[in-house]
Image (cartoon, rainbow, N blue to C red; front, side, top):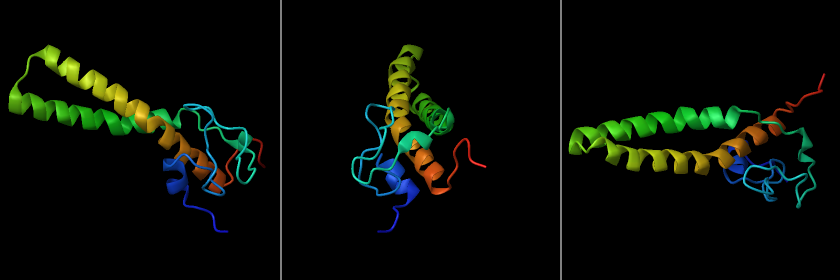
Length: 117
């Protein structure tokens, strides 16, 4: 059985070894082990990486969209607030689990974990 791509497994929030078992027990809480192949996921610690990557992706998208809407329609400031605050929150919350999944899968693929010598 070949290992799935860390990007595919991560974006689908699946086990980095088999690509089938769920990676998370909750929204961002890692499962203790894969229910399909039994991989112990205690090695995984993505830290603040997913949040940083999400910020680097979402912030420019929202800024560009806000500038385009402002240039085309010139809405009042409260319309910008009503559009871009929810859009930022929804995009950020939607992207956090897959980004964390990718970082955990890359950590598994490259055997990068604390305590290794």
